[in-house]
Length: 173
Image: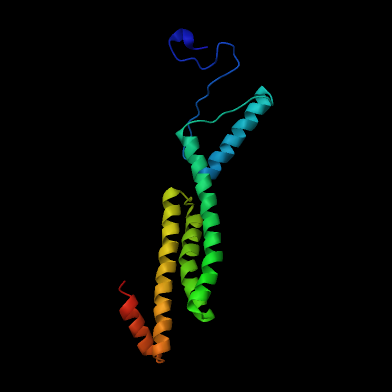
């Protein structure tokens, strides 16, 4: 088609293959997957159902990678919650302390994800990593604080002294 003008061929010599370059703005992962699905539907409607559409390039690989990352993130949070909760109960041996550990750990993540949804901020590699790291740090810090609190409360019964010693010994770390 365009080979006579010195440009690369966009259609093969037999007319059975064509290259189409489509440039789009950032659609987000869900938007990109929907866009590609729509492209495939349009190709099937206009060129026949035996038409094969191959999406290639770094953009598409990044979209597939993000989709996988988001799926893994949701799965990881679910498994982390299901596995960490019983471990906190076993480790602290106190239902009230376990509940006290769960609420402060989940609340910042729920608020952050809610804000992201409200503000239209999509989950990307950076935000997914920040959320995962925040969960790890929050759980770790909560366990250190509550373990020290339990230890101090068994040694001394007065709440004021227990809280002060817990914060003095564990808080700075």
